[in-house]
Picture 1 (cartoon, rainbow, N blue to C red):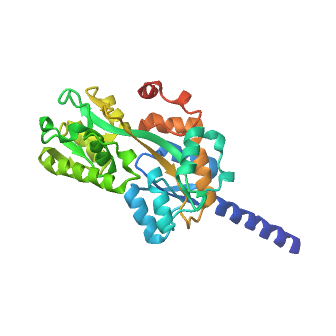
Picture 2 (picture 1 turned 45 degrees about the vertical axis):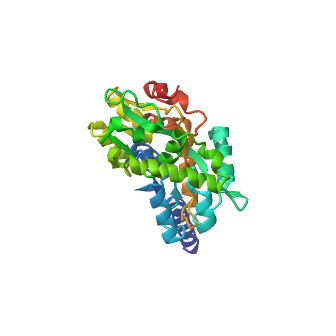
Picture 3 (picture 1 turned 90 degrees about the horizontal axis):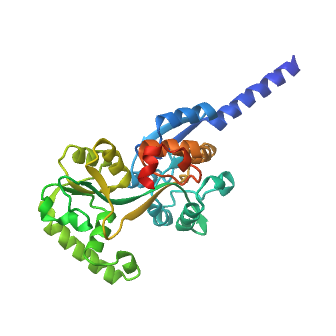
Length: 317
């Protein structure tokens, strides 16, 4: 009887340990970054339940600051929103690269994000997906919109939309003849540029239909014909183009601005193993390709391109 009780206790302990190892992954991410098909597949393969909270950069930072890095197991901030935030607030933990399958990643993106998220000599993120910001244009209504200057062009009065964020500021800086990135090391010159950009934006305020903050709302305003020219991410433009070939992503003549969204683990994550399991799962080529095919957004997965829907892959070639 004693032996039976011991064996029963060991079995119960094993079951409890398995349940704890699986548990729940609390994911803080962007809309569209956790497709239901992939969530279902991950849960079936691992036994880990996924709870998704949709957010954006500002909200991610605010939520994690409020809890000092608690409440979520994995977040997906943009690369440029990590190092400064981490240095000031300490809301992320260093990545354990022994738990990352590095061979799944495009080496240049992997190395760049490791370098660009260094704080205290340790990296705090790995790349997930990337893209560019430029112009989404109704080519029938605004055939001449080829430059960041279009965001202040009287020809499109009442049909313009952009975010009051860094991308529009930098883009208009280029349009005014500045080289914004060269000015980062000169605070006085950089402020001078921002002042000139602010003057241009204030003068052009009557031209603006709205200042967008929600990507889906922006797409709807372009889709409905309310907006002809907007600053936007390329993936949204490709989605609209699939619906209406007259809507295009237009790389401004001054150049597009690139972005990388990452995986970062909050400082007080409770299920770190689940976080690493999700990272490796999402960078597996077939899974990354499904994401790209649905969201029109390329990933950092090294072998995913061959599995992407050919009609989508053509947008990136």
